Length: 130
Image 1 (cartoon, rainbow, N blue to C red):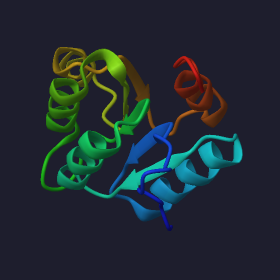
Image 2: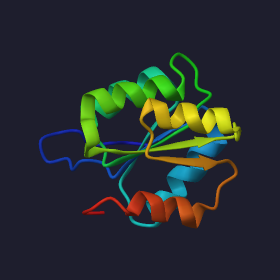
Image 3: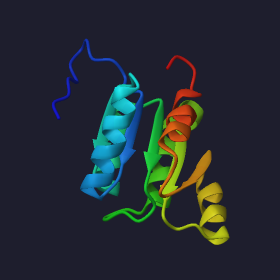
């Protein structure tokens, strides 16, 4: 996927952070087809770098990531972007403990895999100006 990050580039609507290639591409395609500008990252370190540089309006973050887990990604993005980003935990870990850790890390929403893609799109679109 080619991105334009020059002076005229617009802030992405959503950053998808997913290490599974098929899952990442499915989310990218669904959200892009709904008219959203989408960026992707395959690991936690790439997510933090892209997120702080591009300042997306929302981020859909897997928890089980290489390099930095989703909890660390959330804490870093929250520290860098404050409340200017909607952070959605998207994970196969469906335990109450995982949900608590997600809230404690700073996620706004907790969505279990496999998720309803229409509902995920609705959550991302709740951010103003999308």
